[in-house]
Amino acid sequence: MSRVYNFSAGPAVLPEEVLKEAAEEMLDYQGCGMSVMEMSHRSKVYDKIIKDAEQDLRDLMNIPDNYKVLFLQGGASQQFAMIPMNLMKNKKAGYIVTGQWAKKAFQEAKIYGEAVKLASSEDQTFSYIPDCSDLDIPEDLDYVYICENNTIYGTKYKELPNTKGHVLVADVSSCFLSEPVDVSKYGVIYGGVQKNVGPAGVVIVIIREDLITEDTLPGTPTMLKYKTHADNDSLYNTPPCYGIYMCGKVFKWLKKMGGLAAMKEHNEEKAKILYDFLDQSKMFKGTVVEKDRSLMNVPFVTGNEELDAKFVKEATAAGFVNLKGHRTVGGMRASIYNAMPKEGVLKLVEFMKKFEEENA
Ligand SMILES: *Cc1c(COP(=O)(O)O)cnc(C)c1O
Image (cartoon, rainbow, N blue to C red; front, top):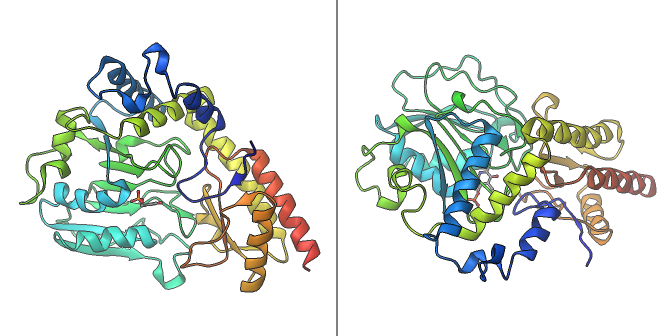
């Protein structure tokens, strides 16, 4: 068996330890004679899996008691619709457009009501986060929406926007559990788990209880009401059982690693290795304004498309895979999520140095 260094933006690298544990439990989960994939979601055994997962997530993120944790399906993209359907009481919401995912959410919201673009960084290919300390925010907005870490462009809010008292909704798909957060500052935090937490197929929604109501937009399907899932502890219908089990394992791994404060340190250390190299390199350049750089997704270019392609090809052959940048940005992107070991980043930088010398 040989494992590569996988820099994919998502689905992405998972902790090897977690994968091995899952492999060991594949045929017989803790003596019950079947795989987690094969058991009823209403069984006692599974109930403990989902309850433990929720509790471990609550511990890790310090989630206050007045927030519900929902394990849902449909990916992060389904939340682009679920959020307005459930929260747009005045049919008006504000969106800060800092990349493709925020833009998709903004466009989806327009189907349900008035979506106001409060700020955008599209003028410079989303390479920065706009100043959101004093935005012109209409009084009657139902919420202010952000994408906190922009997976494609590699930017991250280092400070949350001043919403002037409005509910903050954040897509944290690609920075989920990468550092401590103050949940109480948000109305809704959600993320698809395939970036930093688990296998694709699960989206986790952390939502303040007062935002969960019967009063959804007319025509909202039962399955798309937060209340349906909140009232049934994410077991209204069959949940993505195996995915939730894997997320639970990652939560336990994170606890063992020292929790989110330790993860932040680890992530800062890894990102610094790569950014420091980029800052001194004569060939490779980071594409993001320094103060807004993500710890998770690091896009970079050589400025020469042919050289970019050559780099990606040779890196792949050397065991550093999925480094090709998003089709809308070009160049390269190294996603260095929680489960990417420091060794992987050190070796990537070593490889980049060698490539630079050979192609100078
Ligand atoms: C990947 C990603 C999405 C889309 O996730 P799906 O689960 O594929 O719908 C949305 N937002 C962000 C920030 C992402 O990184």
